[in-house]
Image (spheres, rainbow, N blue to C red):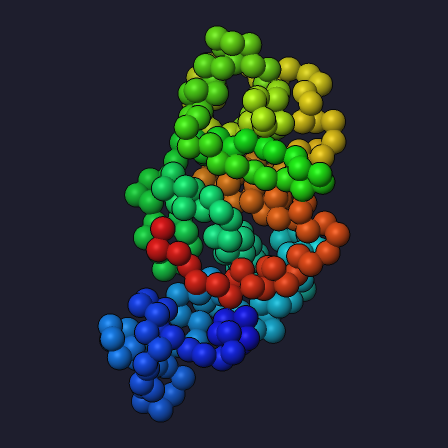
Length: 258
């Protein structure tokens, strides 16, 4: 509970008012200012999946260890689809902690349970720039570069590209070790190929780490790619330890409005 309410001090999740009234003598409270009725986990990521606290902790430990979803389902005694839902919630919770989360929400990424869903799935993910800094990585969303711009860099200026499934990555660009994107706009015809070899990003560092994990997935959609990338960014930066507590704090956080 301490991860949800610092010093056990409750406030309204909608307007942050601290004057609250109990409702029916139970666990729910009503805000004196806006009238919103809530319980301890309302509007939080962990409320999006029917796990109790013990099962959430168990799931997050398995998630930290990279256990396959089918094995998670067997160990937790839940349906495979429930594990996939919990994984999606955990990734959205991780993304919400990123400094560029608002830019990703503006680009159409769904914040999480309780927030309005986009009317349609995006055909392309945002373009990301990868910066390696002394063993740490930043996956920076580049709002000024579109997938079509990236394709133009390739066709008109010779930017070298390669692909992992439908994810395209590039040779170094400006201060970035690579640009990354997933989307249909990068594959306008069979004549466009992303098959250059020996790109700098493949040698070592973050992308070498991320490629191995992405290759284990059964494909990645443009809408899912930012979630996986932000998860991998966190895993890489916490590879020496400390990932579990960060995951717990993330899923205990509030779902942004978007």
